[in-house]
Length: 166
Image (cartoon, rainbow, N blue to C red; front, side, top):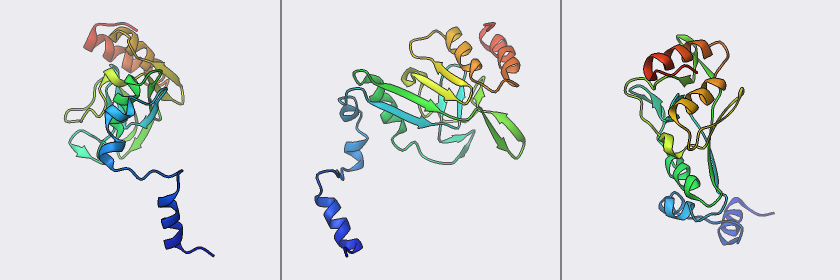
């Protein structure tokens, strides 16, 4: 019977395993060379212009970006590639339920992936296609996948902030 040590040694020698370092694996120049690269990343919040916050909300930080930014950029530039952000439409916090699709990210929130490197945003209410869209189109797409109860509020806020009626 193989031991844990011998299994690890066998895996290191295996041709199906590649133990590359972080600087290689997360190198945008390496990622974008992969044809049809699809990066699927989760988020804490997405604003109506498509900016993605995955590290924290406001000044409170939960995690680092890891390779999310690199993979989103690499997938965007990969021939046939796509960058997909997934999140539930709402989150339950101490203050109660809140939308994760927001008109603007809260003050102090880090943007993990800029709007330029997002092709699709997915919630349980659908898929927003935001790549190469105007702000007006992005806002409409993202409101459509927000929780139905917050859509009217998001529409009002979009009209106030951007002057768009969606």
